[in-house]
Amino acid sequence: MTSFQLRTGAPGARILAFGHYQPSNVVTNDDIAKTVDTNDEWIQSRVGIKQRRIAGPDESVVDMAVQAGGKALANSGLSPADIDLVVVATCTQEAQIPNASAQVATRLGIVAPGAYDVNAACAGFCYALSNASDAIRAGSARNVLVVGAEKLSQWVDWTDRSTCIIFADGAGAVVVGPSEETAVGPVVWGSAGDMAERIFIKDRNSFLYQEGQSVFRWTTTNLHKVAREACDRAGVDPSELAAFVPHQANLRIIEAIARKLNAENAVVADDIVEAGNTSAASIPLALSRLIERGDVPSGAPALLIGFGAGMTYAAQVVEIP
Image (cartoon, rainbow, N blue to C red; front, side, top):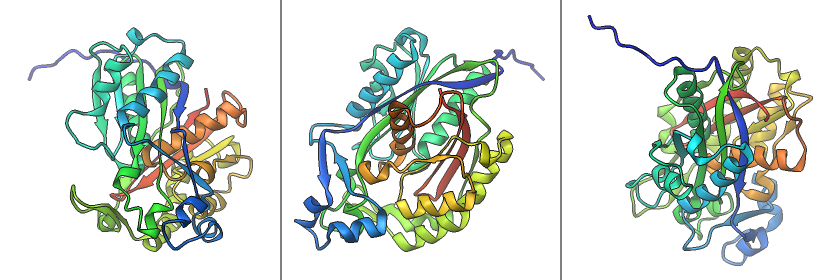
C-alpha cells in the first residue's frame, strides 16, 4: 500500500481579527406594522427585536461579504497574499453557481485561494470556523478568511407576520491563522434531520417557512447540552466564559439557553434586538460588535453556538482576539 507524504500544520489555530457589515436601511417594528397586522409591543414580546437592517435591491450577499471580509483582513494586519483559503457561510445566495467565496476572494485581491461555500443555515459560521481551524492544523492552509453573509430579505414573504418580523441582512467575518496554542476549541456539531420540515424553502419560487413554536421547544430543550459539551471539550468551565454568543435567532431562545448554561460571568450577546436574525452572519456580526464597543476583553474565552434549518447545530469555545 502506498504511503503519501502529508504537510505539517500548526499546533493550533486562532482568530486574528473580526469585521462586520450592516446595510444602512433600518426597518423598525413600526415600519413593519404599516404593512402587516402587528405592533412594536407584540414583536418585542415574542422575539425581542426592535429593528433590523435590510439590504438594498442591488446589494448582494457577495457585496456584504466583501465589506465584512475586507474589514477583518485589515484588522488582522495581514495582506491579501497571506490568505490561501476563503470560506463563505451562507444559505441565501440568489443562485448557487457561482459560489460566493471565489467572488469575494477576487474582489479583495486574494489571488487563487481555495474557495468554497458552506450551507449549514444558521449554524454555518461555526461549521466554517471549524473547517478553517482544521485546515490550518492539517497544513492545508496558512491563513483563512471565514465570512458569514446573508440576504434573508429576498427569501422572506413580507406579508407573512410570522417571518417578516424576524429575518434581516448583514455579514460578519474573521481571519483565522496558525497558533502555538489552541485558541479555537473542538467543535461539537450534529443534526436532527427529522426536524428538517420545521424550517425550509420549498423551491426556488417559494419563501422561507418556519414553525416557530416547534423550533423554540427544540432549541430550548436541547442546545444548552451542546453548549455545555463544547465547554467540556475545550476544558473551560462556563463560569470562566467572558462572552456567550449564540446564534441570534430569538431573544427568548438566547435567554433560555443562557440560563441553563449558568455562565454567570459572561456577557450574553443580544444583537438580535437591533440587528434581527441574520442566520450565518449573526454570530460573527454580534461578537464583532461586542469587540468594537469594548464590551469583552481580548484573550478571554467566548462560547459560540449556531443552530438552524436542517436542523443543524455547532458550538466551540474561542479566544477573543
